[in-house]
Image 1 (cartoon, rainbow, N blue to C red):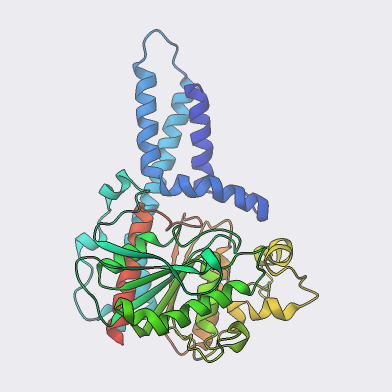
Image 2 (cartoon, rainbow, N blue to C red; image 1 turned 135 degrees about the horizontal axis):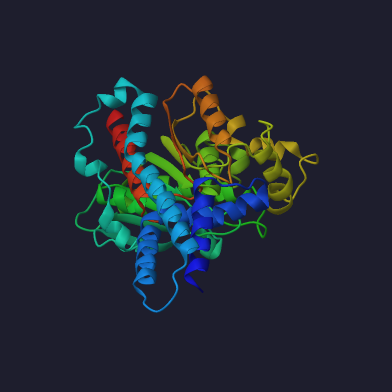
Length: 406
């Protein structure tokens, strides 16, 4: 591939990341697939663009592509803007917590975030796909249900000390309710919290279309019940459980938090305690039924959720969709929430998060924090990047505040 063609590709990727053009399910998926890695790997792409341009200029005896050089300059400017937006998260996330939680958070026990807490983690960007952490022990493939591999969970804890009565974080992976595993998402956050002395649990669950909804939420509830019964054996406190997850996992996180002890989602274990103390959903689907009238939610309901996930049409059984919509399950007894979403999410419109947070604040008696990040796509926390590292640290500060508040 010539220098010009390489620059055409990178400038198109950068433009899509800066301003995703497509709407609808297929177009939104394409924008996400191309824009998500570009946005999160912007520093690496910027370095590669600079190196490629330098090599092109250094070659003797070959014509230089003026258009390619212009595109390289434009790409560098765009990628620099993406890096700048990522670095802004360090301030935006903390300010969102202060604005959402007020003086109670601002005057929390302990010191304010230090410069070390807020600095850009450049070293981690050298190997963003590494999943090793020598300070964390992982007990893998523990069965919590009889669903085979889909009923396995992993437990993360600090390796350098024994814990007892530690707070518990439950991680629910995403993947459109049809794919994904406990090894795919939430790793940076679980590593961070395990280092701080938390016990973290990552679960698999049954997937559609083989197992239609509500199999997924039933499994999440079953995992919570398992935690309440067994987590003390791993040093965790069953009375303090926080749930988190992204995308479909964000939907299941919010729904589980808002339906404690609901017998409809606990067949065969109706008497189990499935309450959680807080929920931290990332870029979740909150309007499963399209109740808000948002075009994004309606298209998702009719073209994806109904035929693939629920395997029933909306007009045949609307209650299934309504019962599965976190925005319709909010009560005054909802637990504390910290909701995070990207403003450029082309899979789940950010308006879903905004309306969900507004409904929580109107009805719930508990605290509701919300952080929205400009220039940010779906799945921004999957691997270490500038943005994801700042987000992980913000969630850590929230969780430590919430723990101290109890």
